[in-house]
Image (cartoon, rainbow, N blue to C red; front, side, top):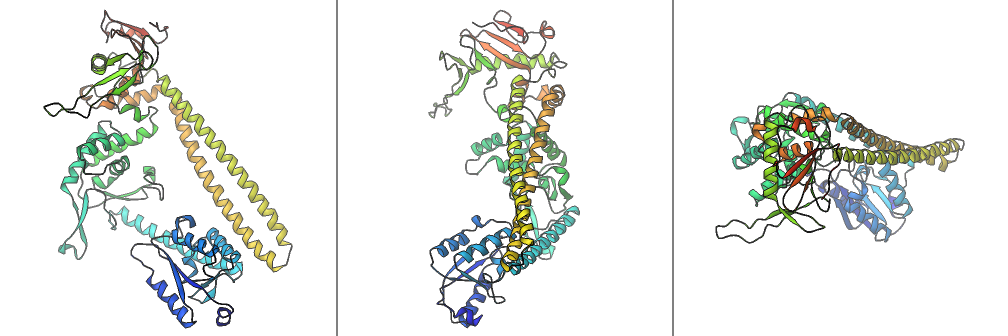
Length: 541
């Protein structure tokens, strides 16, 4: 080592990396400084990636490593000191890529813990090193996962960041452990969130309502979702609930590990949380887009201009100015983009929905509202199915391409096996790792493909079982509690196909329900409206 170091004039830098917030790079830096001092080397610069796991993060996400490689290309140094080789990488793909990059740039990387030369070792030694490093990380991960799962089943809270509405406080009676306590003013908001969601409002709508009511808070739909889908709020602790590195994606409940925790004071009852969670899960399979349910214009998407036969646009012309009593100037209306005629929302929505609810209460729709699934919803479902089919086809093509590359790698490996040359033997290991990397990518693609096929099959089932879906939809309607706007919208989209209105506010309707059951109870003004069956031709003008 001493002789190698003195072979050329050394321009030395230090690279370090640590994984968690409770670590730092001091130990790594100190060891490299001692090595440099013992060999009369001066460290001219340093690169330290903070809170970066090489086992989970890509090279691109490690900012200081990217800068190191950039400066290496510009020949700002010729030697890198690292505390251990696992500070550079912890998986096969990264090791091979970085090892070959440093070699091409003629940069010497020295592992001072040996000490040994990372970039002059054979590829076999590097392969063994990263194999052991990877194995160590996998074992730590498995042991940690088993520990958390076992303790969670018994309702043990293992610490960590508390969800919104809770905080830690010191409690001498707990022998140094912290007590979990509710934050009262936040608990009020949490209860409100569960109430709003149970009424049928979606995550975005609830977030908008809270943002308006509490302008000093920060509310987004992901925050609302995190509250609704977390059983912590009813006194339970969980593990395996969310996917790693996948934002707010929730695993199927069958994969959760869950346990009742005595340390957690519930905000809502278990029944309330279960009800909201079931509603969330049903929305994932619901063929009606939940975004269509959250609007202050109840007849949007179904009301048309009689004269122009085009859908009316919902327009909110609320002014920023206020009346003397402090109320805003508000004007909501439907407008035809062709003839520019306007209809007041209050004169349309109120009349139709009032009589629609009246007929619902009389049981007019009870046996028939589940007969026909909206054609618009069918078309939307079919469009989603077609899109998933295209994505599945693209994934299959990528998988086939990788499979071909894997076959080529296998053929090349067979050719190398016939050679006894040192270089070819090193290349054999490279090709083996390349084949492993390709196989991992193929496995990932296959997993994504399976998930998309599962989703597509669910949509196909929903499309083929429209009546069954409508029966399930009925469970969410309570005629004595239709105060939630989304519930009214769901009702309207379920039973009305099209409403056509003229300038005198006379309207005609195409229904999704047999005319026969409506002949004694019309929801329209007898002298101003015509109610026709969807199988009859709609009269224009």
